[in-house]
Image 1 (tube, rainbow, N blue to C red):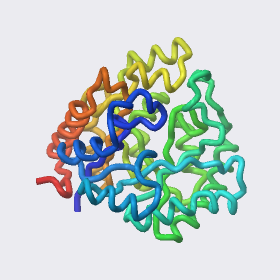
Image 2: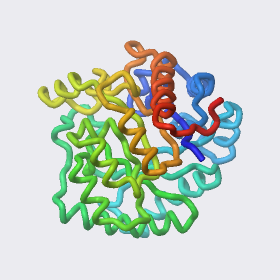
Image 3: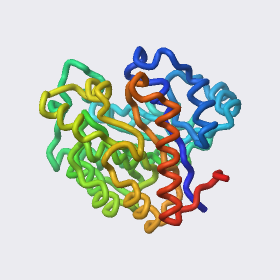
Image 4: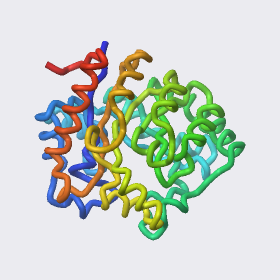
Length: 301
């Protein structure tokens, strides 16, 4: 069994910056993604909300649901309230054979607030993160009991951004909580991509291949810009267009026996980075990395 290659439609349909991608439709996003060769797409906000409507929408594009964002509020909620809040999405993703639910704490995130510098994100200490991990494990036990993995997405602007915070969360949580490993967010957050992947490979359920432009990231940090401003400026890009060594990442995944989804997620201004062109660049780069690593790709002819 090999990996599967999916994409987030965020390059065509940006949920946080809808005006940036107003010229594109979700139908176009899925059609072009499938034409390039992607076999899965993560859920976008402008896809149908109901399960059967979403199933029909994806089937029409001949593309699978390969995950999707879940906004967590566990810092504010008790475990029972949080379970009730996410139960509908869990049921939907299970019904549509998604590989996992991609969960991130959003109760105090600044990722969508253009008035706040990403440098000024909320922070917790080690003990607080580990306590959060124990609490999240109780939610994860319920989710896995429904037959669906839950994968935590470390993300810029949130309480789990740095390599240390990823380590603390994994150390403080049980095996029921898996990791959505995101290369771009980890490097933007100052982490060591290869070292973190090697350390937590046995917990990785889902992988986002996101590249960064280091000069843009450095400018965002130096000038105290928001996460949104960083996206607009081009902090992120597709694999092969930035500075991350995806061959090394792919070699590590091969050595760990990874057999899940590799998902391209690269939000940027389509006027500067045409979605089809860049999404194809990312796909072709992944193909080359997988071929050199000896990592088979399911569904690729």
